[in-house]
Image 1: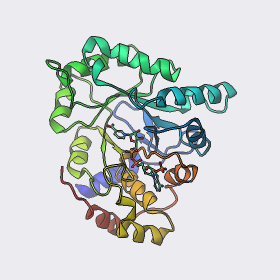
Image 2 (image 1 turned 90 degrees about the vertical axis):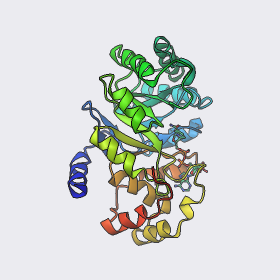
Image 3 (image 1 turned 60 degrees about the vertical axis):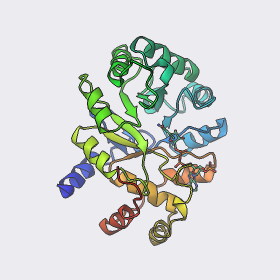
Image 4 (image 1 turned 180 degrees about the vertical axis):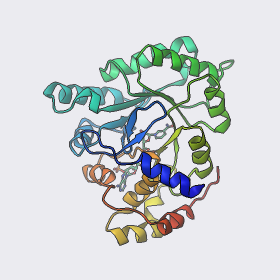
Length: 288
Ligand SMILES: NC(=O)c1ccc[n+]([C@@H]2O[C@H](COP(=O)([O-])OP(=O)(O)OC[C@H]3O[C@@H](n4cnc5c(N)ncnc54)[C@H](OP(=O)(O)O)[C@@H]3O)[C@@H](O)[C@H]2O)c1
């Protein structure tokens, strides 16, 4: 079973490339997402420009990431105007915040993000979190609003974030399967069970904090990740990212440092062995 799903992943990851040569992951609606994106929790105009220059096309932001959407919108306007990059080659993701969780307010939430990004449509819109669901509003109701904005072509795909299995079931029951569930995921919290569950429902996982984030600040100092990295002459961050990619998990590392931004997308020139993967899986600290 494990072998079969690895073979399937190899096919899915057949490294079909979009313009910037970033491998893509096939989604359940037939669309493709670049498997590495820029996490834009903290960005500057320079960091967005430098990411686009080294080949990032997928950018993950949210209405509540400060000025992130506005900064991204400004840079995208420049590059689209120059004709350096075409809109269809970009993959822009944003998220619905709690105050817009009532079905009738979801269009308002996405329109606000579109206006800040200065775009006509998103590639993917996510429910940011089910945790602070307002009283009397179920995630199922919010999902109906997400389906409304999908049908209105304000976004090409819809998905969720921070959802557990039960919450995934609740939205799937509404008739449209989310294309992804964005969750914290890295070698210390590898979400193996949630990944298997999502796989069985044709939902991808997207890893946030893939190089540790604030929750696991020591991840990149892990001796095993460093040892594996030395073998391939790559950093522990590249090992952590490659681990996700080889399991078919989309990764959205954040950095404002041009060196790290470049390094985090330069993860397609080496391949972890089954033995490496087992050793990385053994680092898991939290069973979901
Ligand atoms: N859906 C959600 O609820 C949710 C929650 C959290 C995050 N996110 C998304 O996920 C993105 C990434 O998550 P995150 O920022 O929590 O964690 P992360 O990307 O795992 O970690 C970011 C930190 O790692 C450092 N770093 C990045 N690349 C590095 C490298 N190659 N070598 C050494 N250090 C490196 C960065 O340092 P420098 O800044 O100094 O470069 C920064 O301090 C966010 O930007 C956001 O888009 C989503």
